[in-house]
Every structure is written in structure tokens, then in C-alpha cells.
Length: 353
Length: 274
Image 1 (cartoon, rainbow over the protein chains, first blue to last red):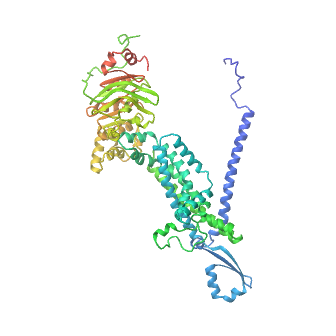
Image 2 (tube, rainbow over the protein chains, first blue to last red):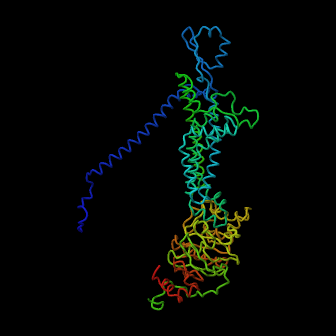
């Protein structure tokens, strides 16, 4: 072996115990424990909602799903404790019918009333789905157009850098601030009042940063060769983007949409003042003129959870409604996200590069 | 400095090759200066690309041959800092850098094949039909006819006629490059620019592409940039030698490789540097 006076003496190549190796091993252990901790927290949350909500949503006998919960509007729960010791629970409509049929039983019983604890959450489901669809369409159109402009057309310079920085910062703005912005601009200044339109635009602006940054990345990831090949054949820049860049960036754009869908569906603060009603008698499709459709407020799942959890006295019945609503909410978001994921898989197969 | 007489000539020019007479130039480059930002890449380049012949640009790395090639169809416009400092490039007597020139029409007349083959991730049929649709040809029978003609012209038809609707990315490297050539010739350009088309191909695929270039030159003017001197000697009619952004010598291929005027050219073709 040639002498190497500047370096410490060589050791055997077999593994020797050392402090550096021990530190690394304990660091890896720490990272693993942290990961498992995160998984445990997520599992606790989902299992809690799954268990308590599942009890509300599923039934032991056919049809195995608590259909009234999913298909009716919320109403007050009346609990009658009859003199013979039995307890009757019924929703508002049923109670009125019961009172007419058996007035003497009602007089003899002790009754308690709990708001929003009976009936179902169907209008809320419909409202959330409508809000998600409208907000995602607006966010995708605006977001993808901005991403195309920023990544393909804009000349790099201080202004463009400022724009990118502003968009990135917008992602960190609290959602309540978006709610206030939406309230000030759409509800009051533009005069739309509490409406689907105001909610759509507020929610769309809230998720724009996610869509724009992810879409820009997806567009950049498309190889330069595809663009040059098209341009060399005599395509205009826009034709190139439309036929040779955008289709291959779609899977990446859809990935960011899945994240955006979850945010749009779940945020309460932006829709509190702009689109959500606590309770509404009509369904969204029961409007006089078709233009009224856009200017009506809706009930929404996350807002319902908020109302039932904080605006009314708490008891076992309201807790059931909260968990049931949370369960249905997770399921609805998962269903919408699954659609987006399936669409993305199909596009990946079609536009493989 | 050893002269061309004392060293064996490195590339061997086929004995049957006689220098073709220079036809009138289809592309005239006159006193061209080209800059990337502050850095000058081309200095006072003047040469005329003769019609329906193969012109090769040779020279060591960084000498500006690819830059000049990309100027001819204005692909350098894609680089923000690239600009013409002085001089003109004329096609049909019109300076292609005139603000009134429609770049799209220019690129339809001057096609390009890139170093790294870039077939679109579409079917083989769609790869070729893409350019045709840009030209406004939409009827299926016409598209079918031109697709077949182009694939035959690129010596690819027999290999792919049964799988026209399979993805173009599923072909081998040589087939992909021939597909790119088919795509370029489908739109019937006047000039085809080739930027080191065989550098990523194995010798058999390279031989097929060179044979193809030999057939194509009857119909199209071809300008090829190549790092491979032997390739330039095999397929080109005229050769331009560039060094550090300047055109050192431009003459018939036989002359450049057998009896060049300039000692730098002599030194390069003998393999002393590069």
C-alpha cells in the first residue's frame, strides 16, 4: 500500500462501530417514529369519524344505509318521554302529525326539542357539490390560463417575478380573509348578495395559487423537443401549446385539482358570509327564473358542522349529526376526488410521453 | 505542421464522387453577425446554400454551426437573448429577419430535423398528419395518401405500414429519426435543415439515414450540421468549415477534404484538433 502521510491510517473495510454511525442510526429511528406518529394521528381522526359517523349513516338491516339522513332536509328533533317510561323520537313533521293524531299523549308526555338534530343533510350535500363544481371550473379556467401565460408567454423580469411571488403568498392567506374579501367585493360591492356566484368566486380565488403553481410545473415538465418539433413544422405558438403541450400537462394539472377540490369542499370561512345559509327551505333547483339559480345561497356540509357544533346547545343528538355530517363530507370529497383521479389515469394512458 | 501530402487523408471520399457544379443559391447568407446577449457567436458569415444539393457545416464544438443552422428557420427566436447584430439571410431575395416576414410561412418552407429525435407521443399516422393539418389539409383520403408518400420517401413505410396507429414513441431510435424526417418532408419544404441527425444512432441506422439523404437531395435542398467529418465527406456536395464563429472555408467537399486552401481547414480535416 502506498504511504499516505496526510491522511489518517486506513481501517479495515469491514464495518466498525463508530459514533457517527450510531448518530445516523438514531436519527433514522427518529424520522421513522415521526412518520408513524403522523400516520397514527391521521388514523385516529379517520377512525373516530368513521366509527361515530358510520353509526349514524349505516344501519344494521336493509337497505343498510340511513336513507332519511341522506335524502331529507334538517329539522328539529322532538323527544317525548311518555308516562309509561318509553321514549319516542321524531322529526318535526312527524311530530306535528303525531300531535294531531294523539293530542292527549303529547300533553301527558315530557317533550324536549333539539334543533337540527333530526331529518337529514341532503340540501347540504347538494350545496357542497354545487359549490365545488362551480368553484373548480372557475379556478381551473383562470388558473390554467395564468399558468400558460406565466410559463410560455411572459418575458422574465422583475414584474413577472413579483407576480409569481404574489401568487405564492396568496396561498398563505387565511381563508377567513378570503371570506371577508368575497363579502366586500361580491356580496356588497357587486351586489350579488349571499349567492352561489359569490361563493364560487371566493372559493376559486382561494385555490388559485395551488392550481397555478402546479400547472406551471406541469407545463414546464413537457419536454422542449415537443414544442420545437411543432414550431419547426410551422405551428403558431398557441397551436403548439394547445396540441403539443397542454394535453401532456393535463395529468399534472389534475393532480393539483384533487388537492384543490378537498380545500374548496372543506373550507367554512369563505362561504360563511358569501354563499351559505344555515337553513333553507327550497332546493337549489326550485327557482323561478333560471338566472335566479346563480344568485341563491345554499346550505353546505362544513358550515352545517360548524352550526351544529357551536351555535346550538350540545348533546348526544347533535353529536350524532356532527359526526354523520363529517362522515358524509369525507365520503363526498373522496367521491369527487376519485372522479378526478380516474380522469387523470385515463388521460395518462391516452397522452403517454 | 504536417501538410496534407505527408499525412494520410483522414476521411476517404468515394472515388466515383465528382464535385457537382454549384447550382444557384436558394439561401444567401451575407455578412451575418449573431449575438447571444453580449457574446458574439457568428462573425461576418457570408455563404450561399446551393439548391437541391447537400451542404455540410463542419467544425469543432462551439464553432457556431448549429447557431447558423437555427438562424435559417428562425428557431433562435425562441431564445430570448439571441439577436442578429448585422447582415442578412435571404430566401427568395427576401431578408427573413425583416419584421414583415411571417415566421410561420418561413418554417413551412424551411423544415428541421433535430439531433435528438422528437416524435410526438401520438400515433405514427398522427405524427405526419400533424404538419399536414397545419397546412389546412383535412380530408382523410388526402391525408392517407400523403402519409404513405412521406413514409415511403423516408424508407419507413414497409416497417410501419401495419402499425400506423401505434405510438410513434414505440419505434427504435433510427426509426424515430426517420419518422421525424418523414414528418419534415410531408409538408414539402424547399429546404431541410438537419442538426446532427445521426449522432444518437447506431451505424446501421446511420447508414440508412445517409442513404435516405442521398435520395432526398433530388427533391430538397439539404443543410446538415455534423460532428462526424467522414459523414460530411460521404454525403455532402459542398462543405463549410467553421471555427470560433467564423467561416473559414466553403468549397466543394472533395476540395475541402483533399486539397483545402486554408491551413486551418487542412489541420482540422486531418484530425489535429476538434
